[in-house]
Length: 610
Image (cartoon, rainbow, N blue to C red):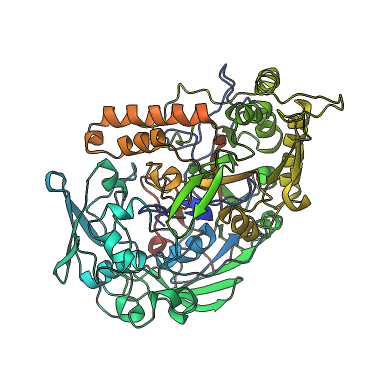
C-alpha cells in the first residue's frame, strides 16, 4: 500500500500532498522520521553531545515474507487506532485529519505516483510535465482509468477538484497561499470569475495549469498542484457548501483506488470490497474490514489475532508486541515531528490570513525559549519511547535528507539557561513562593492544551509540567485535563482564549516545503506567527532560484535558524513508526521506496494467526 500521502491530524494535506495534524504522542498516525530515507532497517540512535536521545532504538526490518501459499481472496482485518470516532469526511478535498485519510487510503483518488524521495514520477494514473520557463504544467491521464462505478476518469474530474477547493463557498483548509499560485484562483474564489482562468482542458485526458511561478516544490506536489481527482459525475449537482454533509462524501464515495466502500458504521467501522475497475488490476483480497480500536486495546487485539495490521501502534507499548510469535514488527522513520506551539494571534477567516498580536501573552521570545530549554525530552524518550523517539532539532524531519540540516542542535535540556532567560525577560519570583511573576510583578500562569490518550500521555505531560515548575513556571492544563482529539483541534483551530500553548504533531506529507504550515495564508499556522522576514524566507524555499538544489538547501537552513531563534514552534520529537504485521500476511514492505500496495496484499490463511 503506497502511503505516500499521509495528512493525519495523522494524516492532513496542506498544499498539494498530505499534511496531517497528528494525535497524541502515543497514538500519532502520520508521517515522520529520524533516519536517512534510504535506510532499509531501523538505525541505532546513540548518545551524542548535541542532546540526541541516549536510548538505543531497536533494529527492526522494513519488510517481511511469511511462509505458506497465499489463499484465493480472503478478508484483511485492519485496526484504525484512535481513541475517538473517525469523522467520516471521505473526500480528499474536504477532510482535515489523518484518521479520515487512513479510511480513504484503501480507495484513494490519488493520480500521481511518487518515488522513494517523494518526487512525482510518470508511473501513476497521470504524468506531470513541467514547463518552468513559462510557469506551466501539464497533467496527462495515461491509461483508460475508470471510477469504481465504471465511469471513465477524464480531465473534467481533475479540474473539478480544483474548482471545489477554489470555490467561494469552500471553507476547507486547502485553499491557501500555494493554491493561490494558480493564475485565476483568487478571482474564482472572490466570485468575480466563473472559472479558474489558469486551468484549461486541452482534451479529455489533458489539463494545462498556468501558475505565477513554478519551483522545485512542484515535483513534491507543491506550488498549488493538487494530486487528486474528484468524481464530477457524482458531485457536480451538489452545492459546494453542502458537499461535506452529502451522501456521496459521507456514505458512498466512488474511488479510483483498489477497494471501494461497501458498508460503513459512522465513526466505527468500514467494510471495503475489491474494485473490479481498478486500473492496476483486481486486488488479490476480496475485502478489507476496518474497525476503530482504542490505543489502550490495540496491543491485546494484535496479540490475540483479531487484526492483521493497524494504522499505527503506540511506541510506548512496543514491549507488548516485540516478542509475540504471531507478529513481525516492522519499522520506518515517520514523515512527521511532534512539537510545542505557542498562540501568538488569530486566524482571520474572512481575509484568509493569520494575524499576529503583538500584545499576545506568549509574545516574548525569551519566555518561549526558556520553556523549550526547560523540558527534559531525553528522559521522556528513554523512559516512555524505548528509543523510538529522539529529540527533534528542527522542523524538517531527517527523512528529507537533502533539506534537513543535521548540524542543528535544537533546544537541549538546560534548566539553568531557562532560568537565566526568564530572569533576563523579567519573569521573577517576587513573592518567594517558587513561581515566577510576569514582568509587571503580576501572577503568571500558562494554560497548555494537550491531547488525551493513554495513561502514558498523562504521565509525560505531568513530567513536563514538573520540568517547568522546576524553573519557576506555573503551567496549568486547559480545561483542567487532557482534551479528546477532535475537541483539541477544534479549540486550537479556533484560537481558543484558554490556550496559551499546545502540544501536538504534524505529519508533513511528502512535500518538505513549510509554506502550508507556516505561511501567512496557511490555516495550519496554528501559532499565527507572521512577519515579513518569515514570508521572505518561505518564498525563497519555493522560488524559481530554488531549482538549484544547493540554493534550496541553504534557504531551508536560513528558515530553520529563523524559526529556532523565534521559538514559536518548538520541535520535540522525531519519530520512528512501528508496524506489527500478523504472520498470515504473505509479503509486506513498508519502505518508502518499495512499499507494498493494497492490491498486492495476500494472506496465507482464512484468519489471522493467534
